[in-house]
Amino acid sequence: MPDSPDQGSAGLPPLLIEAVSYAESRHWEVAPGAWLIDGDGPARCSCGDLRCPLPGAHPIDADWARKASAGPGAVRRWWTERPEASILLPTGRSFDVLDVPEVAGCLALARMERMDLQLGPVVVVPAAPGRSGRRLHFLVLPGVAAKLPEMLRKLGWPPGRLDLVARGEGDWTVAPPSRVGPSGFAQWARSPSALNRWLPDAAELISPLAYACGREAPSPRPQAAQPAPVH
Image 1: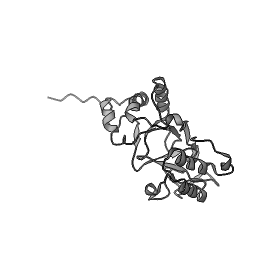
Image 2: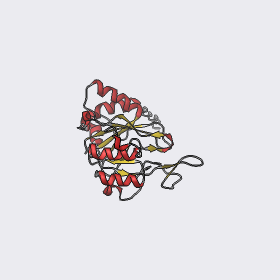
Image 3: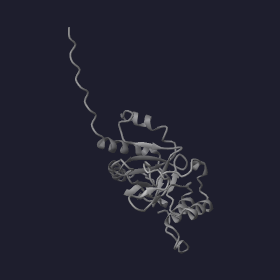
Image 4: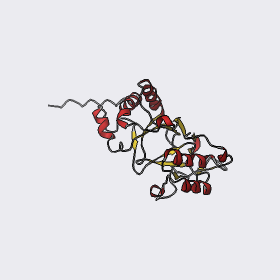
């Protein structure tokens, strides 16, 4: 986590402590998200939609992006009022996110470390309902969302071939220790620290990420042979 809680944090809700820490230590804007309600049967999202596609991991206010704040006072007030709310970090501001499957992300992460590349924080996000496998979110400098298709094309990957997504303006990532869906909590694969305060440019990470996603991508189906023309 960005900072260890001090004695003054004893007894406070964990999500409040971390949300304030993201604002104070990293100057990241945060916004409260939905949360999970336990009871009879499976946990359900606070939004009330029994088929919610992102239970506990989406905004609770249509105007959430404008209201998001890095002011510790506002953040502290929000989580005092809703201590169970998930922590959303808007993308396209302090950072963008490169979103990849966990297996490919771990493969790329190991390769990047061997290459001694500068890396920022990396979030592990549980699988959404109906999807298999967790996701890794690599935090990078903002601006990659619009450039990603062209960056992949230059590496030889056609549009839609790789399960590699950029999250920018208007999107978000879920920050630890938020509870996401019935399958677990968001966690840090690489925690925010003084060593990764300066985020990498996405161009430095795209090649190993694309390579790892390409290894995990299913092979394209061969086109069926066309019958010979009849003369």
